Length: 102
Image (tube, rainbow, N blue to C red):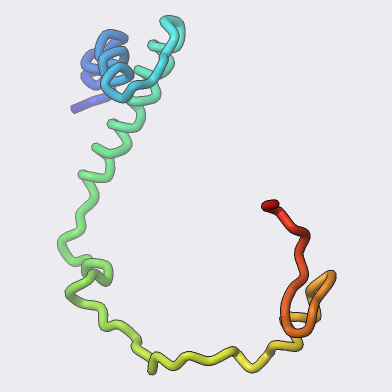
């Protein structure tokens, strides 16, 4: 599908229909702009289809990748004083915050 054909297929009427199906409000004077933009996107996708990928290995997917597992241990991080040093106000080992709900 060439650029000329894409532009013929994506007319204002189709853009208006896509906008309606997408629940988007598109002004009448914007339809031609969106038709050109969508046509450009479709043309770009067609260019990607022309790329020869016969010798390209697929990216790591769920069936190839192995998860790097670690032991699930609950700790406090052993950095309580470092964390609490950022508090503008604290009470003992807790952040002091203004009362929000009465």
